[in-house]
Image (cartoon, rainbow, N blue to C red; front, side, top):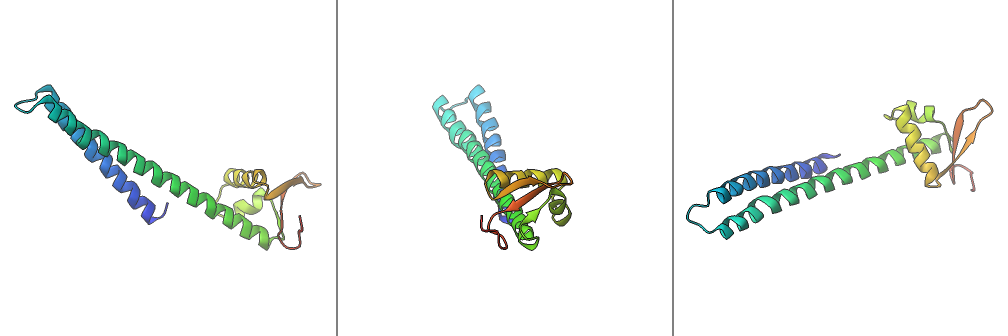
Length: 141
């Protein structure tokens, strides 16, 4: 997540906290309504508790998803650039050694690129899985 995504997430978290405080305060007033009508407190609970909390949760979820999507796109771009440098052929070890990904993350990313039909998997004579990327350095597939 970049700085803006983190800031949006924090705003959503603040909305959740304010909504929770509003909800607690409004529910306390429902137990002992005092002079105002119960409907006043029901509306206060809705507008000061439930709606801000729901909006905050939605903002947090949206920021997290956007951050994950951006991270996935960045990883994909890095792998494709590495594939271009290596004449369109990569192994899990190549990706793990040349990126910040662990070997399991590298395998998962390469498998996803295979599922997206950006690469084909072959097994070399030594038993290593090699990913061949389409349209990179003379590959006309």
